[in-house]
Every structure is written in C-alpha cells, then in structure tokens.
Amino acid sequence: MAGIIHIKETDSTNNYLKQLASEQKPDEGFVVWADFQSAGKGQRGNSWESEAGENLLFSTILYPGMVKAGEQFILSQAISLAVAGCLQTYTDGISIKWPNDIYWREKKICGILLENTLIDDSIGQSVAGIGININQAEFKSNAPNPVSLAQITGIKYNLEHILDNVLSNISLYYDAIKAGKSDEVVKHYKGSLFRREGYHLYNDGQTDFLARIKDIEPSGILVLETKDNAERHFAFKEVKYVL
Image 1 (cartoon, rainbow, N blue to C red):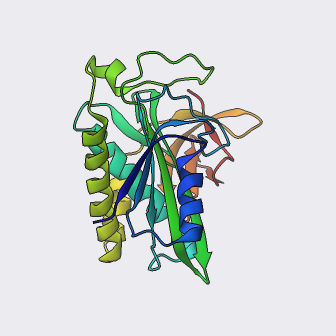
Image 2 (cartoon, rainbow, N blue to C red; image 1 turned 90 degrees about the horizontal axis):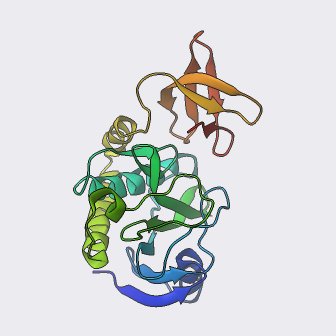
C-alpha cells in the first residue's frame, strides 16, 4: 500500500509531491496531506481559501502509462467521480461542474487540479491535487460560492476517514480505467454533471447565452447546444457557467 505524508503546512501539496517525485519515485497512490496550504491553486489560477486544519487538502500521484495524451481527461473524470461519490454518502445534491469542480446544489465544495507529465504520447505521471471543504464554518474571501460539508449538515467530520474514502474511490475508478472500462467511467461522469438537464446560462467571455450540455468529448471539450440547435465547442477556460 502506498504511503501518506501528513504535514502541517506547505505552499501547495501538488508542488510538494512533484518535488518529491523529481527526487525519488513514490509508489503509485502515494499521498501528501497538509493541514494548510499557503498558496493552494485551482484550475484558473485562483487561490483556494482554507482554514488551517479544517478541510481536506491533499495530492496523490499516479503513473497512468496506459492513458494516451489525447485521452487524459479520463483521469479528471475518475478523480472527480471519486470525490463526488464520497460526498454523496454524506449529503444529496452533489454534482460535478465541468471539468472537475464538485458542487453541492449551486455552491462549490471541492476543487481539483490535475498536473500531467507526458512520456512520448502517453501520460507518464499524474499529480492530482484535491481540496475539499469539510469543517470550515465560515468563508471570508471573495470567492463567489464556497460551502463546506459541515455547513450543509451541521456535523463535524473526521478528515482521515473522508480521506480514506476518497482514496478507496480513486482506486476503484483508476482500476476500471486500467481494466479497459473507461466507457463506464465516462457514462457515470456524464450522468453526474452539474446542470446536466435543461437549458442554462453560460458566458463565452463576451456575452451570456442559453444552452444545454449535449456532450463531453474524450479530450474534455464541452459541447453545448443552443435553443436554435447550434452546437458550440469549448475547451477549459473558454466558457463559464453563469451562477
């Protein structure tokens, strides 16, 4: 079984684990878990607000050589499903906001950042950084819509138990990919999407528009369909949900 390093503080668990991996090769599934990140980061370069010791901040490393570079989004789907599946055991209303934020209703409860390294045309190393709001009672930054599990349920949680649950789920989905069952992972991901039904507002950087989710391509491209049946394709950061 892969090990866990539990530290009080680091700038970013992803940075810590990538540095460790540059010096030695940790076992697949190795975890760096921190009580506090001084420079936690998200998909769009945003910082991640987290009170020391109240939330779950960790990174894990995988060596998914069976995943081709053009199909690396399957790893993002697996990780987000693993977190969502864990949180669904504590509350309803959990979904995955494309590409891999975890939402409770209209509020963000988890952010995920995957940093992949290529070897030839495959993924040699994947470091998945995960920040889940667990026990924080109040958010003070200007982040638009954070929520914690404790705010939802009124209960304080054992962080280690939730970490174990997420890691078990990651193993399940990762094993499915290794066994050639990526189609099942994709189907589950699409069925777990935030606002997967009906038309909703999006913004393409210039204007708001109404559309529905039509598909997610293997590369991670979001395919939206407007009410006049026009298809629009977006890569990461090219479109935002209007919340």
